Amino acid sequence: MQRGTRYALLLGAIPFITLVFALPLVNRIHPMILGLPFLLFWIISWVILTPPILLLAYILEKKYNRPSEGEEE
Amino acid sequence: MNPALVIIFATILFSAALGIYAGRKVKMNLENWTVAGRRFGIIIIWLLMAGEIYTTFTFLGASGWAYSKGAPTFYILIYGALAYTLSFFILPALWKVGKRYGLHTQPDFFIKRYDSRPLGVLVALIGVFSIIPYLQLQLAGLGFIVEVASNQTISSNLAIIISFILTCAFVYTSGLRGAAWVAIVKDIMMVLAVGIVGIGVPYIYFGGFGKMFRALIAQRPDHLVLPGATPHMDILWVMSTCLLTGLGFYMWPHVFGSAFSAKSDRIIKRNAIIMPFYQIPVLLVFMVGFTALLVIPGLKNGDMAFLALVNKTYPSWFMGFVGAAGAVTAMVPSAILVLFASTLIAKNIYQTGINPKASEERVMSLSRLMVLAITTLALVFAVFFPNELVPLLILGYDGVCQFFPGVVLGLFWKRVTKAAVFSGIISGLGVVAVLILTGKDPFLGLNAGFVGLFVNSIITLAVSFMTKPGTGKLE
Image (cartoon, rainbow over all chains, first blue to last red; front, side):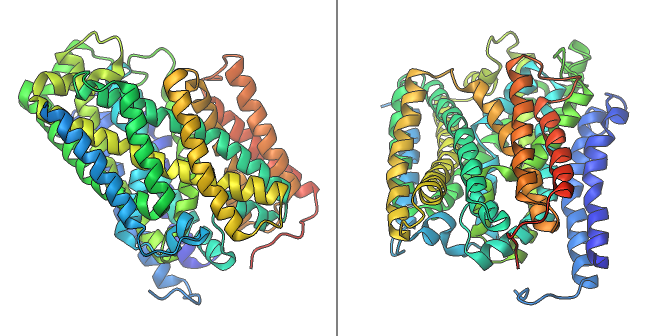
């Protein structure tokens, strides 16, 4: 496996850890943040953080993986 | 004439005309019809995929669940983010295979990768049987929205028949391109409707989200944590359902197939990055459901929450706008579902299974004929047996999820064999069917589909190690 792909997969695991496996730890109402109950705040935050995480994965893949043929724009 | 009615009809007619117009000057062969010539750029792919995930179920169901079930509805927000993250890794590889071998459908992939026509036919059959109830749900949702939004001046059946005949027309003429163009109208209207209502009602009744939530917590302290107002949708159920639906989303034949319509693998990868932003409107839909619970408690049918609250709060012409948005929200996914169900029947059941010598032209004209047949069938079901198919829908989602090991291992692992995928799919489906039919869903707190997928994955891996890799390969 190429280095860029490895980094990307590690980053890709983050939404699964935070949005699925961490749920038992965050299933509560308090503290309320920005007016949202904590569980909903937690979920929303990680949903909104998913695009920057994937963008970073994209950049790292581009940086560390050999460009394969036919991948130009 | 009632302004709501005018808005609804004008929108439906305009969308259908746009859909038909989208296909002008395009010579229709299977490549152009099902995958739009593989020419879609990032914006249109985004709108198209958003058009698929954001259906009437999201609109009515997400607010309805927020209203009647509470926190378990958050799974809708979660599974999308998981599905898009997976698509970042899976779809570009899939797109490349599709491009290299000129694949149009999901069974095409299985046929090519595992060199097995029977496997292709099996996948096509499961696909079609899963699509029909999904399609019927869209029709039922459409009828419901239009009937309520027009203040009962248009009956549900009349709304379904008119809008579905028009949908059928633009699918017939323009294929996937038609659906993509209508998706533009749909997305703009949906985001406006959901934005105005979702931000509006908590402010109008409570002066803000925070105050609305505090009022809700004071009244029902358990509604906003799992398992909410339900007896059985606890953390484990939500976790397994999120995983199942997240893994399964791109396994729907129509979603899988539309990935092929992108211009390049880079486009599809970048699309995966921006897709989660489309989840924000879902949050606003929840706000409507929660506000409705405080303002109009005691509705018998939670799915009414969104429309009932809009009706109470806004003038009737705005209700018409919401009805029109709801109608196109049903038309876009319906169009794509009809398109892919038709292609599956013509290409992967008829050509692959019955008459391998059928020409491309024959498959194309049969696909179009199937558009008419499936439209008629879905209309008959929606009008005469509106409630019979709902249990099948659950089975449908659990069914298409069983393709996951065959697709992912097929793309990334040389060792997986057709015997393994065959036995995996069959045993996964068997487990799901037994659990659902004997009323054991959830099973030990887990979603039954997830249990099926787990068994399926183990069997696919085990049988792969016991059998020799076959002749099918990619590259």
